[in-house]
Image 1 (cartoon, helix red, strand yellow):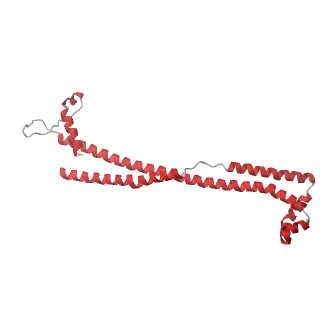
Image 2 (image 1 turned 30 degrees about the vertical axis):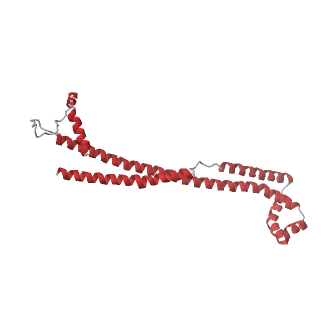
Length: 226
């Protein structure tokens, strides 16, 4: 700060014609004991004004740096949080799509199995599934077979067509449910995390050291003035 002030004063002293611009410029010059002057030297007042401006600029810059670090950290944290939520939503959409797809294929397969098993004889079922398997299958299929047999031929046809249509609808819904949103790749997430750690651990630490150095220099300058 002292070097900056000395440079400003020297540049102003080298350009006495600046006052031609019409602004109120204080009288400043570097004192020389061998050449006394009757003009009041206002260099101390100018130096105090310059020092105050420099202090304010440094403080504003450090405060701006801290705000920028907070904004960057908040933006990266929000982006990573949004990516985690999007990943969760995509995973849930995939599970929903897989369930609907399985259900869509299960309906015609169950209908086909019902027709095939219904056309098989009792002896053939016992040979294929065994007595216990045949008994368990009959326990679950008997109510369905009774309902199916109670319908007329036209109603059975409409029922089968409705089940096939339901299967297609489930598959279409599953296809639309599988649509996912783009997410960050592992490399992108790793880069964002590294940037966040750099801002938190490096930039903020440097800002803290600069602010402490600025305070120490300000205190030492005040002691020198006293």
